[in-house]
Length: 469
Ligand code: UGA
Image (tube, rainbow, N blue to C red; front, side):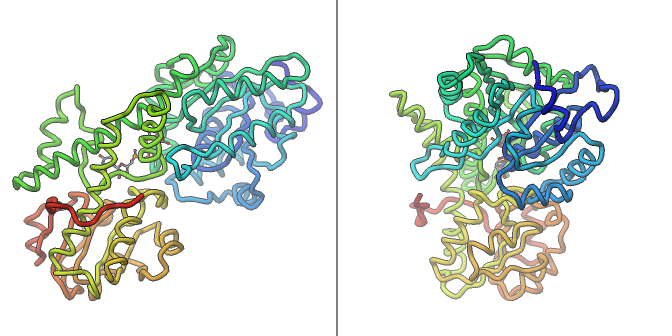
């Protein structure tokens, strides 16, 4: 890959400043630009810098770039901020807003812009197309390999490659590789660096080889495929995880009705290696920016391809039902919710993140407020984000304060601090005695010994609280 010398000299993380180009675990350090410093982009940039590549993070948002330069990460992700600082200090990572400068020295350009959901259940690709056009213009006659990290519907990367090559003005073709990301929030950097597999999709053999070399120091298989296959692997992975969760949540409904502990059932089936123990924790359902969105997109993609999916709509229905049943059970236990005080522990879509996108808490708060309940809440990291959506909720600085005067306590996100919390003290501060453990964190006997009436997630028949999307 030839890079124009004049411009590479000015590149913000020029390897030549480090004297001899070092090699980490057999890795040839490369120059990477990551477009989009959101969740996936920032983790990708930091991850590659950590293994010895030279990375420039690019974002249109000047204030975000300024924060990152100061070593501050605009969202909560354990360990990420330290690594951002460390890699900047070591000259492996820099953040800028200037496309021309960032692209000029890069051998690879990762597109990691967000693709939020349209109202119609399909991702909005406006940011992606905008980024492609800007990269193309900024690159002039230079041809870095374009790496698509954003989750894109099947067929998008082919269309993107065609677009770039149709308008190529100097005859030098663009190489495009789709490289879906499988990292998981709350343990993102670790998941990036210790991934189970790298998936690469392209119709360009040389680009596939080059892209694979970025991961030379990773100890995992590399799956190389066509564009559409790689894109499908990403959707199928998330849809499988969603299906596994709705499976155990459906079993949980049955267990509740039969008085069986779903955790024991999950362990009993998960020890079969064909099933596996992970993603078998029942609860109030899955949320986040990926599993729900990608499962819905798959339904749409199937429909567009002339296939009517029966499984995935059911997966989503089970998930919605888990949220709705929380409100049904509380309404039943408190003989109506009007004027009742409900305390929620945990608002983020899962522990160790402040992300509230499609979090069960959002639907549940909306339904509780619609029924006239008074909601008090505590989350170690997500109070402010939910506060921006529901100012009428009282957000508390700690879990026990949140319980004060409550008629019912509901655990929605299994942050570790809730596991060992003093439930007797929580009960003392409440006026009511109802506890609903939405994540199966405690044993029923432990809850009852603390003086609570244990509410399970047994389905009311018929369910009264439909989730409208
Ligand atoms: C998910 C996938 O796990 C990643 O592999 C993928 O890269 C990512 O989406 C993405 O497409 O970017 P993430 O959204 O961070 O990652 O969260 P998960 O760990 O998958 O959890 C999703 C939801 O499932 C959470 O609400 C969590 O509470 C719930 N969950 C998870 C359970 O209810 N039980 C479990 O056993 C596991």
